Length: 360
Ligand SMILES: Nc1ncnc2c1ncn2[C@@H]1O[C@H](COP(=O)(O)OP(=O)(O)OP(=O)(O)O)[C@@H](O)[C@H]1O
Ligand SMILES: [Mg+2]
Image (cartoon, rainbow, N blue to C red; front, top):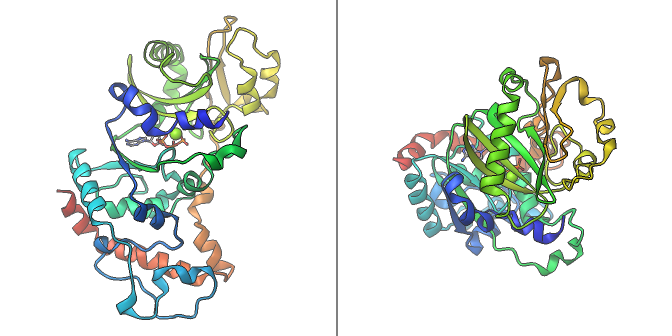
């Protein structure tokens, strides 16, 4: 995986080519003030979004956090970030997309921050929902600070200027068992895995041949040859027989979750007819809980899914249910950060009704 492979997975790089087979979305270049806001410490919502300020009375906070406006002691000087034009554009787009959107930046969605939202999903109905999720997510911080981590040529990453964008996608009620992650190596579909790999879905066992055949047809007709990297990962949602929806592209490498595959295994599936015969020995004991549809034809993708209810695993993001801020609080290191966060949550609860009205 090199920097170019990661750049090929930027949403705005692939969306124009694939917009007919994916979810309707808008791409908004981030104004500098908004980018600064995302990169700043603290979780204050912008001026337009909240009626009441979340300011603290104390001014005795030391260190870098003093640069953040929320800790000002003088209410007349309390500055909240403000980007009215960007916000009104977001409102228009949310309305245009039916009132509910799924937000992400160039590569990542704030999936680790759902604990902070009302319905524990990424569904946003107004700009402040989007701000709160983006500001609370370490995955978003990764996009902003180290997008080229693990690239072979990452030493050159500092020469690449990334134009950051907010992506607003029309909200879809997706059933988790129907989404699959597909791994492409040397231009060939080598592996498929159920996307939500911590659950058991009885129907997958029953329909495994159909699922593989639909995904293969989708790949070879709609995706292969159009995506510029030789190695990549894409996620697909199988709504019904023969009805597939492209969800996202991801780099082929450790930054992408291999789910029920290890990256050693995935790299062993060469996709050029010379597969590494050792791959089945490397599945780290997962064979009792997962299954693969494999044939002697080396072009056939390996399909892996949870085959028995006992194969259910802990949710990989359960650790994100305890936010860093709470860890800071329990260690006594940063109580103000936590107070800020709780204030924010209270504000959000208070304005939920007005948020719904904004969406109308
Ligand atoms: N428009 C949408 N509405 C509802 N859910 C969505 C939408 N788009 C994506 N999702 C769900 O959210 C998940 C994550 O989306 P996406 O792949 O865009 O984020 P990501 O940060 O790139 O995740 P990953 O790192 O796993 O690829 C998808 O697998 C899908 O289940
Ligand atoms: Mg993705």
